[in-house]
Amino acid sequence: MEPIEFELNKEFRDRFQDALNERDGDFIRKSLEEVNPADITALLYEFSGEESKYVLDLLPLEIRSKIINDLDSDTRKTFLSHYTTQEITEVVNQLDSDDAADILNELPIKTSEEIIARLDAELKSQVIDLLRYDENVAGGLMAKELIKALDHWTVVQCVEEIRKQAEHVTKFYAVYVVDTTDKLLGRVSLQKLILSDPRTLVKDILDDDVEVVETYMEDREVAEIMSKYDLESVPVVNVQGQLVGRITIDDVVDVITEQAEEDRQLMSGITEDVEEDDSIWRNTRARLPWLFIGILGGMVSARFMGFFELEIAKITAIAFFIPLIQATGGNVGIQSSSLVVQSLVSPGFVDEGLWKRLLKVFSVALLNGIFLSLLVFGITWLVFGYDPLNMVVSMALFFVVVFASFIGTVTPLILNKMGFNPALASGPFITTTNDLLGLAIYFLTIHLFL
Image (cartoon, rainbow, N blue to C red; front, side):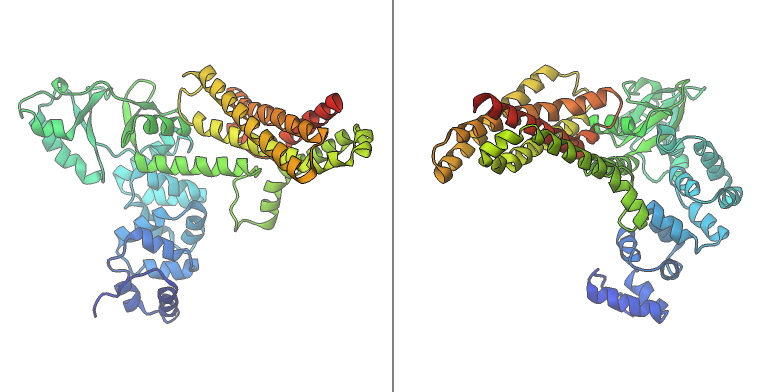
């Protein structure tokens, strides 16, 4: 039979589902024969755990292991509930130590211990070492598989050792150089090894200017270092400076993705890490806190407007512009805070020209305030004709834009300084604050000038 062309469209999904229902293993095997494991992973999300297991059992163990490793954590836990302990052990034995440790951390303790007891000796030792670290530190991110050489070796000895060690390392970008106590001295690129004289000592060609991370360093900090210096991998050392593992870019991408998702949810006013398929109560609970704060903010705004009841009664047109003031203040605040939160991802943002950056933000706010105020003044003049209220509304809008920009810029900086996630400042917090600020400025301007 000729290989079946794979295209992830509705027609193929329907045909694939029919093959699953009929347990047509020949069609399934042929259709996935030359398909990238990532595409198979995407396909399996649409089927039940039992159906997915049937599909994967038709594939080679190496491909099966990669697909299971690529699944998101929640899906994988559900998926592996259909596997026996022995089947999970076979999968884990195919993985790098860091991926194996991640999967074992997701399983019940009893199952995890049974699997560890059955692992290959070398992987078992590596996994046990990794499981003692928290998941959100460098030690929990790192893999034990790496290529290292002693400083007194010659280049030819180093190359021979690479051939031996590379059997257990899927990707490597350099050779780490250590002394007899495993203390990290530097690294040697593969290019330099190839071009150097075979009799040259490794210590004479190593690069000792190497970025390293400690086992206890938080994952966010590791991601910042690798992003800043554009690293494919970074060595991990313990407090004695001994080389204990390495972190590769694919592990850091996961951290960055999780961080971005967490920030996005915080900016949306969601206080927990939730997915759309989580329970109704969990989704409700994650949304309520900031909605409750928003309600309180609205009630405070209503009470504040009550102080100016006489002014509103005399000039009812005042009320027409309240939504404009609140919406503009909220939008300006969110824009400013979002830019600052984005910049804070870059290490050294606060130290490198902070006042210069704040002056720039203030200048932008002034220009935006002038443009928006002139626009509103022109429109109100054309629609309502000239009236002193037009001028007052435009003045109030100018002040609201400037102050909202200031609040949106300073709030994430203060939260970051206090050790809180600055993304908190980019959602309902800023919107509620600027609603109150905008009303205060608006009515105060009206009270003073009218």
